[in-house]
Image: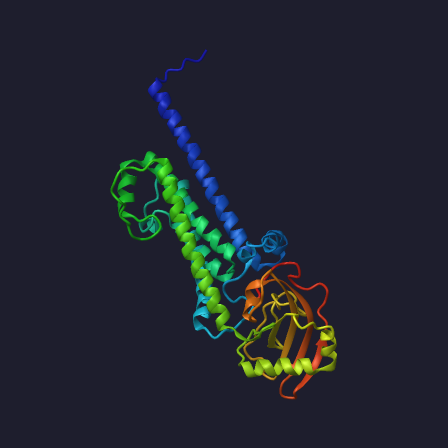
Length: 388
C-alpha cells in the first residue's frame, strides 16, 4: 500500500491548484469558442455559401412581429454611393479596423505561445507591456470593424454581448495569473490597462456581494446596449436620408449610384412607357407597393434580385460606367403590418421583395433597350438581405 505523506495543508494546496487549472482551461476554451463563433457569425455572411447556415436564423427573426428589425441593416450595403461622405468613411474604417484587429491578434498569439513554449512565465513585454489583454482588445477592434461592414442590428447586440463576455474572461484570467505569479503580476496589473493603454482607477468602497455585482453588470450591459442601438437607429435614419432616391406614397426608387431626382424619374418614366413593361403592371392595384432599384447597366448588386449575378460579379461597380445606360429592377415589397404613410416607410417595414422585371434603358435615345424577366432562382432568393 502506498503511503500518502502529504499533510492536509499540502492536499489543500494541490486541490486549489487543480481547481485553478480547471478554471483556466474552462476560460481558455470559452474564449476560443467565442472567438470562433464571433468570427464565423460576423465574417461568414460575406461568402454566399455561409448564407445557407444563416438564412434559417435570419428568416426566423424576420417572421416574428416585433423582432424582424433585428436582421435589418442600419448602414447602406447595396447602394454603392450616397450623398454622405461620412457613411463612405465608415465603410473604409470598417475595413481598416477589421484588418488591424486581426493582425494585432495574430501578433499577440505569436508572442504568448512563444513564451509558453520557451517556458518564460507570465508575458508582460511586447504588446502586453501596453495592455494586459491585447488579443481581446484586438478582437474587439476587429469585431467593431466587422459590425460596420455587415451592419445588422443583431450584430450590434452580438458585439455588445461579446464586450461583456471578454471582460468576464479577462477578469477570470487575471485571478488565475495572480494565483500563479503573485506580487509580480499584481504590480504589472496596477500599471497596465486591461484593454486600453491606460489604467482606469477603480472606485473605492465596500466590496459588493455577488448579487449586487451581477445587478451592476446587468445594468451596465443594458445601458451599453441602449447606447449602441440608439446610435445604430440614428445611422439608419442618416443612411435613408442620404440615399439617392425618389419616393411616392406607394413607392420607393433607390439609385445605387449618384443620380439626381430628375434623372431617376426619367429612367423610371422611360421604362414604364414601354408596352412590354406595362404588361407586367397590367393588374396593378391602386394600393400596390413598389420598391425599385436603378443602377448603371454595367453594375451588379447581389442584394438586388437581377440577372447575371455570378461569382466575382455580385458586387461589380466600375467607376467608368456608361452614364447613358441604366437598368431598373422593379420589385413588389411585402411589408409588416402597419400603414405606409410615405415611400421611405417601405425601407423600414419590408419583409420580402417579389421581383417583377428588369428593364434596360438608354436615356440618351429615350428608349428601352431590353426587357428581362427575373429568373426564378436568383442570388439570395430566400435570405433577408439589405434593402438599400
